[in-house]
Image (cartoon, rainbow, N blue to C red; front, top):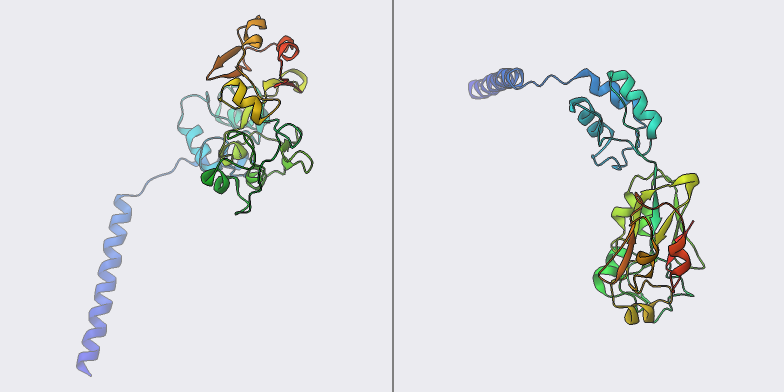
Length: 268
């Protein structure tokens, strides 16, 4: 009986001692969090999409409060109005950035890019990309499994049944970048929405030489440089057999659209 009693008392004493130690440790290492973080987090939309570059809204709120300025910090979901509200609450000046949208840089529909085989594995672009070239002769184009669709929390992207290419809803896309990260072939890009929601871009990411690229897809960029020569604003560069239009320089003159021999440049 005495042994049991001694054991119980000993355990209780150890528990009390551990609690006291933990109390003093917690006091010593206690971090006082800036109350403004809660305030800023409350002004954010709470989507926790990661489009801002942080793990969630609280991560962005913490970064905003700790930063000296709001340069480079933005919430793609809340947009300019949310950042303006946060700036006002913190007594700062909001930096208004250009609204962006996700753009699918592949026009390899079934018509333009004939299917040469059928993929029977797991319905995942990441898996298919890791296993082999895909079901066409183009090793760069869209795989059509819809990883981008699954990643979007806002229902802003869907797979076109006829073309088997993803399509972005302009009015739903918040430019969170989830689809960009989900695409293993990097065919989705965030670009400025442009004046009156118009954009010009090269709808191809194929870096093969012209003959090979065109063999896999009839609307592939062949790196001919005609678009770069036509552009008066130095907005187009050609590297690795592929043209790219810098949306910060493009003035939507559309001359490049006209001269492109394969119709790889899209105006929307």
